[in-house]
Image 1: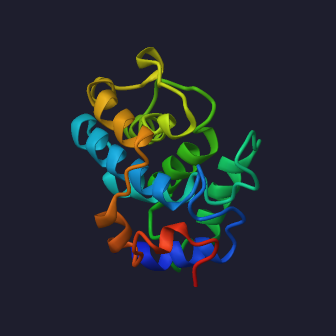
Image 2 (image 1 turned 30 degrees about the vertical axis):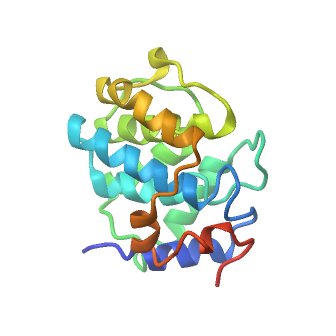
Length: 179
């Protein structure tokens, strides 16, 4: 069964506490998706899980700074939507949950899908003034993508095609709330 990412995003945003345009908001999620599908294509990761990770990994942050447990909260939200909006078997869901729960812990080894998820997020650190350390990236593909992804993060590139696939426009992404 395919996922309706626009409906998933609407559900996430019903309880999203931060500005849509913030450092951990929807434009970041869209860049994570673009980074992640590229890494997954190269390392054999599950692109569907990577797409869901992009939506859920920061979906339940309560602040833009240090926010312990936000990845677990994002994974818990994905779990709450299983069977209605999230359609993964147990094994694939466990990977999604682990990717969300551990995405800030600095791991660099594991399942190819986990690695694609974690690299996807790390490649977007330029948005907060951090140049990712290539030694802390998990995959060769992420190291190859680093200049491209970092330039996009620093420039606050807006992935309009991803936003459109989620039912949003760039103007929507700068609003405080979205209905």
